[in-house]
Each structure stands twice: as C-alpha cells, then as structure tokens.
Length: 369
Image (cartoon, rainbow, N blue to C red):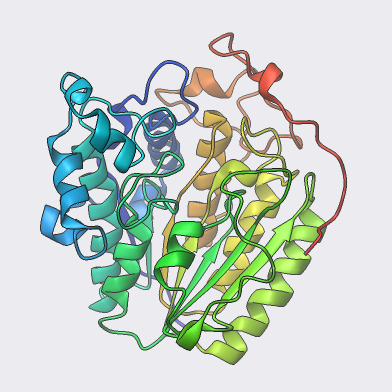
C-alpha cells in the first residue's frame, strides 16, 4: 500500500468560458462550477494543481488525421458558411457546432489529459485528474456527440509509451465508442464500457457481442444496460466485472472516464444512479492501487455534474466532504438546500432552462447485460 497518494489536478479557467450555443446541452461552464466547488472544500490544498499546456496540432495528429486537425484549427463561426462540404465531411454542425475559440478549447482539454498521462509515466504522481477531458466519441477524422478531439485516445497513446497494457473504463451513460474503435484491433488496451444500449440511444454501438477483432479479440468489453439502473445493480456489476478484468489482464495503468450523465436526473441520461453510487465506482478503481488517470465526460445537469466530480475528487483524496456546500461563486446554483448529496433524480430548475420537460421517465429496471 502507498502511504499517501500524490495527486495532480489539471485545470484552465478558459475551458469553462466557451459556449456551444443557446439550445445546446453541453455547457463547459460546469467545469468552472466544479473547480470552484473543489476549491471551496479546500481540496486544492491536498493536490498539485497544474494549468495544462495547450496541445499542439502535431500532438493532436498522433491520433487524428492532420487534415481534420488543420480544419478545426482554421474554421470559425464567421467563415463556416464557406466550408459546407468540409463541415459535412468532418461531421460539424448541429451536435458539434462551430463556436468561438473551438480549437483552443480542444487544445486545453486534450493538453490536460496528455499532461496527466506524462506525469503518470514519469512517476511524478499516482493519480492524475482532468475533469475537462473524457470526450470519448471523437473519431480519427470526424467530430461526434459533442466531442471534437479524443483526449482519451491521445492520453492512452502517451501511456502506452511506458506501459505494456492500459485498462480503459467508461461509466458515461453513452458508449465509449471512439476509444473502443481506436483500440479495437490491439490487446495492449482493454476497453470496458458500461452504458445505456437500445431504442436508438446514441451512439447506437456497444452491443455485448462487440468484443474486439484480430489481436484485439476479447479485449473490448461492453456492458449494455437498460433505463433506470440503480446504485445496487450498477455497482454490483461494476465491481464484479472490473475485479475480474484487473485480475486477468493485469494492466500497468488505468484510465477512468467518469461521465456524469449516468446520474439520475440528467437532461440526456436515463440511469438512476446517485452521486454516492457513481463515486463508489471511483472508490473501487482506486483500491487497485494502480497509476490512475481520471477524466470527466458527459453530464448535462450542471449543478449535479459539479457535485459529482467534487465528491469524486474527495474520494481520490480519501477525504469525506461535509454535506453543506461552502460559500463559493456559484452557490446560487446549488439552492435551495445548498447540499452536496441530492436525493435520487431530484434536480432544481432555476428557470434558466425548462429541465423538467427534458427528464426521461425513470423506471426501476435492472441491467440487460
């Protein structure tokens, strides 16, 4: 057992100031809210805080095609009407809009995950956190599902320089398709994704039968689940599967994508996990005492995302947090109770968006996988 984990935490305030557009569910502002909550609980005093470098185009092209990276670099809201063919080719548009400072946004969140991987490789920390990362849908030559650059693939490629085997675990409500696809033919990365599957749910991939091919056969694991899965069912499945995977695969390092859209009450999700249930998965992974890279991902009810990732930062620091949220710049978002733990599926609308209309019907069905 390590006596004390050394934790590196990556954050750049600029990442939360970009805006996907008025009706877009992705709100990078949730990253500012998370960071302020982490700081209000004084968790920053227990970690090494770093501002990530902005990933260079050549670094992004370690996975993505150079022409795609170049296009992201060049396109702006003002010029996009001149590039209709390219927008279609690279899947930019409704789900993945072109907005102000898009490329810089990609550079920051990808830079954070790359830096996190490098610090782990150089044994400068035991755990590295980049809540801005985890954009798991981006493909080699196209954007997908609000994701433009796949920071996870870039981080894993970095980790493979020092580790023979990398284990990737994904608890976002959506299938981690971009990461699975990138490593589908290799046994050096095992991908395990727990996600909603069926009824045309995005991205439509992640069947239990999809297990990898060629050298990668049996190195992709998909756990397709139905609406409304709760803490007990989810954590039981998670613990059983991940314990077996770690025992058999013996990874040198773990990458954990903590998409918070698997929480109850998420605008786009349909699971019934509490923050404690979600955080229990982080606790389980931490107990393996392997080098660990932790990222964010989806999550579309901002205040619950901030609560969740703050609690999980506490879990990684072995720090229990008081339920009353300390005073901070975004305290009004956490009203009226201003508490860290929320009852299952209970979210408050501030009249900013009509959240209630977007709520999926939660049913208490257990997993199909």
